[in-house]
Image 1: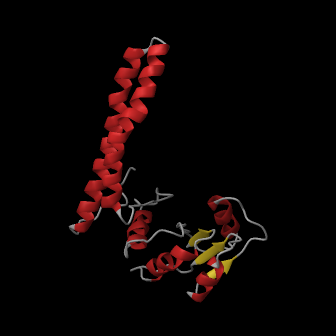
Image 2 (image 1 turned 45 degrees about the vertical axis):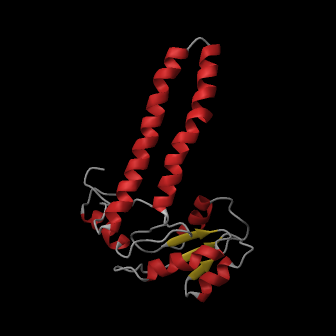
Image 3 (image 1 turned 30 degrees about the horizontal axis):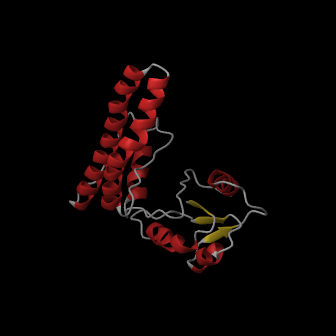
Length: 188
């Protein structure tokens, strides 16, 4: 398990706890302290996590992950953001995908901790978006004599926003009711 982290001292402990409490715990947890200035490496070390620190900041999560990949000796590797908390069976569920020899990678859905509030904010964004998005698009389209094209594209934009909001809300409600979303479906 690789956790790339830059100034993540405030959230790293919850992430590490969610990893060590897995139904299928990872063989190794490595936090890549990407030259943090807030004590991220010390927090990780205090939690018993192996800490790697590049000689200079890599500039990205991908850079920090790549720095740690050279130390991986297991067949599979998983990366998680330092501010993410996994469901207790996430690794077990993702591992199940690899029983199929045709599967090379698996991923899961990340839901915000305060997803209901996020969805309320997102829905409010639809109301705010109308004048913020629609008016400039329509004015610009009128100026370029493409009003009909702009008017037909706006409903598509809002339909996609609503579909995303609905999916997130459904996922949160299903999770609260004890129904899990599938993290792997054959063919996807």
